Length: 378
Image 1: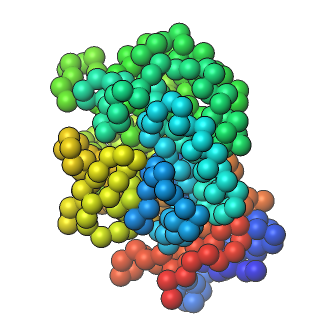
Image 2: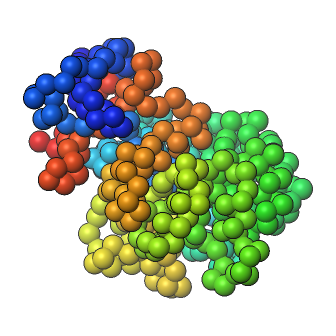
């Protein structure tokens, strides 16, 4: 198979040959009037935090294979070739059974879900940090739990978010063990100090989960999590570019400070790519208003987002003025690096990519997954 399209970073026309699901040969085409009409090509988007999508909740006990497939294909329609199914805090004794179920669905439908992100239960229970997670299900890091969830998931737990300050020494042991077992570790829902963040980085932590959210409402002027993360050696920090989780000016400030350490995530819940209404995030009831804001009914807190991944790239560009292709890398190549995946338009890499137009507005034409077309807008 051969694709002709414009490189998303250089704008140059390319001829791309694909064999057996990988890029076989990528060559530049001489500029011609015809090449100006080529669509754009870019690596498929990689979302590390999908709680639900298209009306489907990944935290639902009633999740069926049909629903799982709908969700995966809805994400294809929105530019996402790789994602982590994200499980929020739940009772300790429920993880094994639920991860076994998710693993069965994943094995039966090997589409764009590449594993699982466990956001909890090792989070801070403080007022600002807890978000919509249930306090009574939170706990200190548990090394035996780690063995249990890795076995139950078929070793597909690829990311775990923890708050290391709840027990520093135990958390550092947990991070080292998780990394040794093949999972990346993020810090989030946390008030970790700079010193604790640096210790976690040395132990192997790679990421801060949705920086700017799940933080205390009032923080000291200088000794606060935002400055501590920026000053740390943590390789990456994720941001939600929906304009609702982090207001525009704050988003601009954080991206200027963090530079190429920023990655984008949607933190999408069931109401993403769906109509306004009432949805669930696990046992939590979430109301999605006509503006797409997802609010937990009981507490009034944000309960995930309704952001579509493809839109997220261009919303980040609109808020910051930073070129859209830089944001595309923040939503594809960089998150793939966290998971150890060689992604991007390079010979030998997996051919999972988006074909799209920019004018008159950004529009996803087609999506290819491992060399096969899995979505077309026509």
